[in-house]
Length: 191
Image (tube, rainbow, N blue to C red; front, top):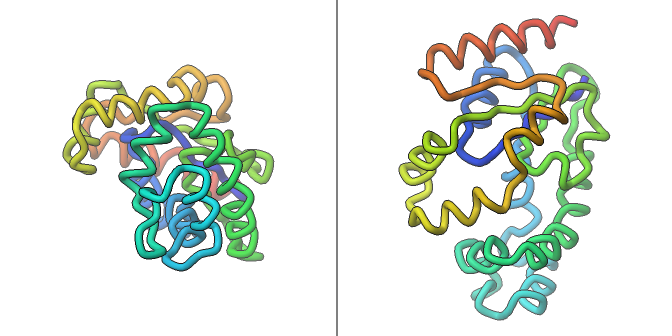
């Protein structure tokens, strides 16, 4: 079984994935897959530099902050980047799905990449916007303006609630969220 775990940035997908991994599921972190396909020296870096400017790749290493400033300010450029990276990320994921057991794709861009088609079940993690903003300021060290641009570039909470099979709200305390994750995935992992 393949379960797609998605939701907006700062909602708590990583926290949910850690709980689920502890329950015996294999986790594929799609952000890490993106880092693998854009590792120093990767061929795709030439395409990124040509498309988004030389400042995005320095000494054959992707400058994620520079690229982020470009793509999170312009939806057309974000789509260009997705068109370049999503096929590579999808190929990486397919190569790394185990033949047995339960696999969870921790994928913020599950729908944008078309990965929901690989999933038997989809689960969204959501949280109130102000809570997400606070978490991201602590976690990423970006300015509130940069975080707001990233948040605005993503699908809405209602999109996830309408398009996923299940939704977990992470607006309360950590222990409540952990219990909700265990309850839902306990049912999914044994079905």
